[in-house]
Amino acid sequence: MSAAGEAIKVGELGIPITTRTTIVHPHSSAINQQALIYQYLNSDEGKKVLERIDAMPEVEPLRNRGMTNSLGGWSIFHSHHLASWWVWRANACGRHQADEDLREFFANDQIDVDMVYWLGNLEVAEALQLGSQFELLPANDFYEVEDKEDLLKIDLSQRGDWSPKATSVLRRRVKAPRDIDRDEDRGFSNEDRQLNLEFELASLAINCFNGVGVKLIHSSSYLPPHVPHFGTVLCGGKAELQGLGSLSDTVEIDPAEFELLLTALVKMQPKYRDRICTALRRLNSAKLSKSPHDFALDLGIALEILLFLGDGTKSEIRHKFSTRGAWLIGENSADRMAKAKQLAQIYDQRSDVAHGGLVKFKSKAAGSFQATKLEQLEIAECAFQRVIIEGVPDWSSLTLGGEGWL
Image 1 (cartoon, rainbow, N blue to C red):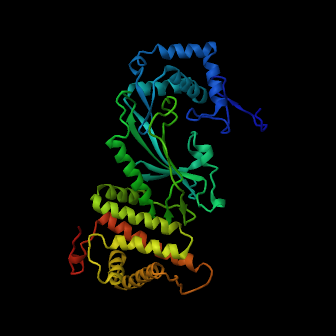
Image 2 (cartoon, rainbow, N blue to C red):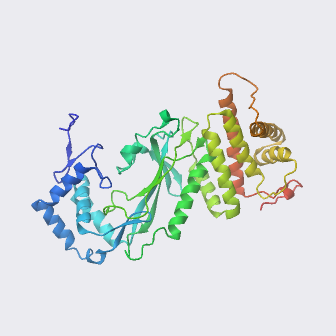
């Protein structure tokens, strides 16, 4: 029995599989499970495991190699680390599965690595496939890693910094070299940098859907449970970030639309993509803002950046802001007129705040700000989707009846 009075599950090798308060995955440094594994390795049966792995012909070429254990991170190969992983895997999933995973590891020079953003205040009931190998899943359902227990408890809301605990995970499984020459530390390769760029673009693309705003609690990369893990990371690893939120009760992201947006962002000319990313960050800030003044300023700036891509002129900004946005998302003449009025309101609210004034709403009733916020965000999301997928408009051509896109 555990200290809490709960029955402790015993694995195939007779080692207790403890709860999260200790550890059920070798990524964690929690002492109880590791101590049990080391104790097993010192037993007669454990010594046989170590001897068997040490004698494998596939092991010899790996000695003194750097073994990948995160994107851009590695540790020196030691056979006892491999044996520790095998004991953990066999105990949890059976000897046959551990042997299958080990054969797969030896047979390939590439391994799976999970790139992960831990997200807060955004909940999904089950794994949601987004396309391009990205998925959103409940944080509790993610396999056990060293960060998980702490991230599930983070809550800085009482300190005035809105960074809730992790409730979901954005994950993408990628391939990385299994091992490297330890004397030629590769650090982050160009391929790694491209993967990180695509991950950042994916998190920004989510802003184009359903009132979802993305900020991050924590970013990292891990080896999934079926891949052998080798001790402490020597380089690469983690970056502390800030938090996430959603304006909607449910997250609805169409995988086909998400993949279309992400592909377009990746292929976009850097000079336009950088500005759109800046605009998306402002849109994100608007979505997460609780102040109507911050919302008006951020949303206005986001749309101004978007609607003036490829246009260096500054004249008639309000008129261009409203008519260009209406042209992008209006379905017919009447709809474009209505959208132009809403866009003019967005611009006026931004200007009021920028020049020291206050945002004014037609109604002072409770919920007026939230209702206006959702309406205006829907306009912004549609505009961003159109420009990202179709391209940057050539406004000088389009306003004269042309079909030009830069």
